[in-house]
Image 1 (cartoon, rainbow, N blue to C red):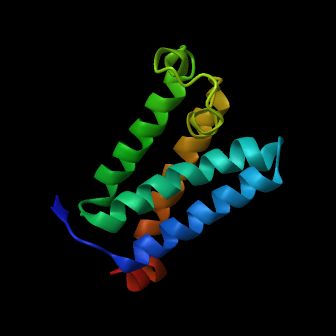
Image 2: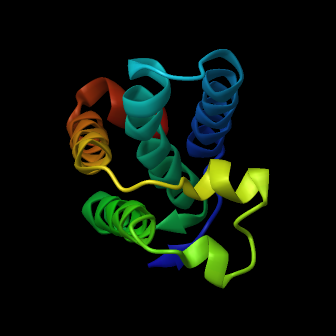
Length: 128
């Protein structure tokens, strides 16, 4: 694994970040906010890491998925309270506050999508 900057991956990660902000601002509940947002957030993590690291797609994908899973499993605990952030609106927004198996499925499907895209011919031409 080497450090290097990839402008195309960074642009995609920033577009995904803006999409996540739009989802949070525009949807209080429902499929878009809770499921599609989780699907996108793991893709965002992947592209952000890929912006700065030259490593195999699978390694970065699994790392991104593990981070999402750890945060999701922490939601089953009082970790925000332990950190003194239980009243912090932004911490609750970023880390969430309730565990959901559906979220784990959305993360997994997001990473599967990323790995599929990484193998596509069009994708390889644009990003490499």
